[in-house]
Length: 365
Ligand code: NAD
Figure 1: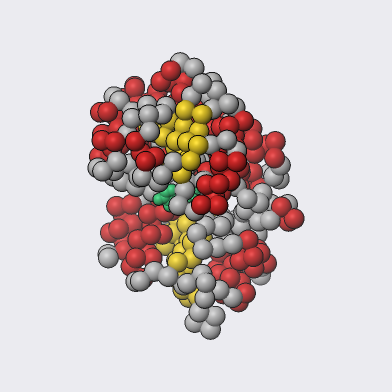
Figure 2: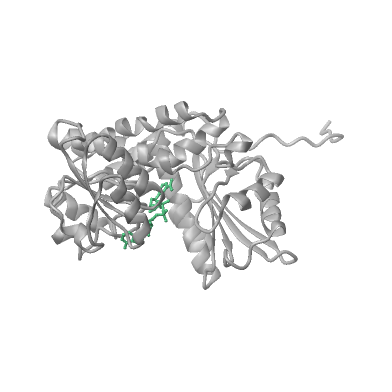
């Protein structure tokens, strides 16, 4: 890969390779765009087969964070980090503290959080070396588990979509197919049931599904979920579930859920449009988790987090308006909304968001 050409194409500002052989640290931090504020995004630990695979992943994920923050109206840029290693075997205090020191050298341009393969104990080690971390435990004044807020935000996105399709956002006479009842999915089922919705759910893990059934969901098979005649299909597990194979089977009116990267490709988004199924773009719908951690800068509390996630209703409605205004599918309208906000607000300030450096004793005169 020609790295500078790749960055030119993707618009990345900075890519940092972090190495400490003594503690086995090989990590990459990618800062995509800091027009709106410091780059925020989690750290993923994964046993990548090659360095190129790790690099591609961090570049893709960090760009996604820029769009999610922008479309959500946050004063944050997009960034992400990956640590190359097996989370079951290669973790140590020294590794995470070394990584925390690298984050600290970026002086606030990059702020990290949890992602796949990283847990709250690893975050504690990072937090010992740098302030630039969010999603720390509530015992430290942090925001803790984001999944209830992601679910709450997703409900706001669903309501915006219901309003658009039916002119009525009441959940109590609507039906939902929730694919995956893990952290977010189970909270989603709980909130939907609380508002009286009819919920079908599936999961590959029997005990997770049983928990959803206890909340009043009707269990269905993991393949059957695509064929249900429901108002809303809510992907809450895997990516790329809207694809060539599943599209002809869908009978829902709306696709809206918390899973990341639901569309296998852009064409899948176009096909949803052709089929007359309204797609509420995933990164706008599932931004509740990001909103929740972003509040840590001002001092986190539950009410503030809930208030912020309610803005997802407005954001998703705006996306639908842009889609109509420009005659484009909603996935594209979301990208356009994010880019328009960055272009407009980018005129206000320069991208560098770090703190000024001081060099005591030096003087130019
Ligand atoms: P999780 O791992 O807790 O839950 C995922 C669930 O999906 C698990 O219960 C798993 O058994 C199930 N699953 C896996 N394959 C399945 C299949 N083929 N059919 C049905 N179920 C299947 O993860 P999570 O934190 O709940 O996240 C769910 C999705 O939401 C992911 O795409 C994640 O990226 C996205 N997301 C989560 C958050 C958050 O706050 N946790 C924030 C933004 C986006």
